[in-house]
Image 1 (cartoon, rainbow, N blue to C red):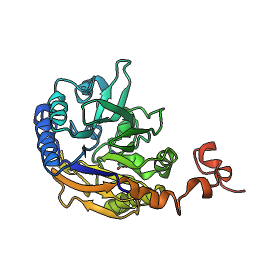
Image 2 (cartoon, protein in one colour; image 1 turned 60 degrees about the vertical axis):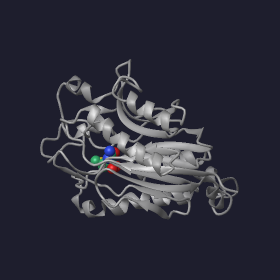
Image 3 (spheres, rainbow, N blue to C red; image 1 turned 30 degrees about the horizontal axis):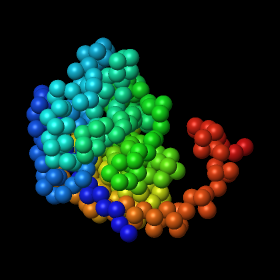
Length: 308
Ligand code: CDT
């Protein structure tokens, strides 16, 4: 038995502030066409794939940065991507900033089916960084100023003949993200990211960025018996070096494809969704082996409570 989804992880190199949406969409189209040539059913683009990673700068008046947010999806700038994907019969997942009609600001990923219809739009749950300007930093990571944390949590949707979930960047570091989707039977998780190499609060972690990136996605895949597709916007963007190393991880926890540049680069894997059941039906047979009755702290408290 096999259910193959051929997936492309379309890593992007830097997008600078002067790059227009039209220029970026042209780059996405190049990767989309490569993916179609390589037989992909689905191509995954990174977090904030239409703009530079603008939370590295702080503006007192947030509306000055409204131009970094989309008001709707698709829109005039991204319609060529939707049209070409539908013509090629290929689905895609796109990360971008959304300014909703009610004024709320979200960091989102939209999953689009092969016929051009929207499967779902996922909002980032774990918003890292800081809320206020921190002038002593070499660059800001003010995501908590620019985005609200999703109240919706992690959904799983039927698409591409399987069960698909999404998460965005920092979400991949939290085991709860994978487990929430694992408990809905997820078979493939799609995750875009922008990860600066320099972690200002603790630079001893800088050299470990690549290790931590694969560590969390490999363990999340294995412990939930799911494929995980992690896609970077990497390279030196506006002077800030960001991790590449986009990966496609099997339910065994093994990396089956990895980007070797920090630029626009497509990696592809033929993913058998039925391989998930080697793990879901054995070692990680949740129904048989999980003990939710003794996991109450996981949803009952936020921070650690130390013993007396
Ligand atoms: N985009 C994003 O979530 N980046 C964070 C950076 C670390 S927190 C400053 C990440 O988890 O990769």
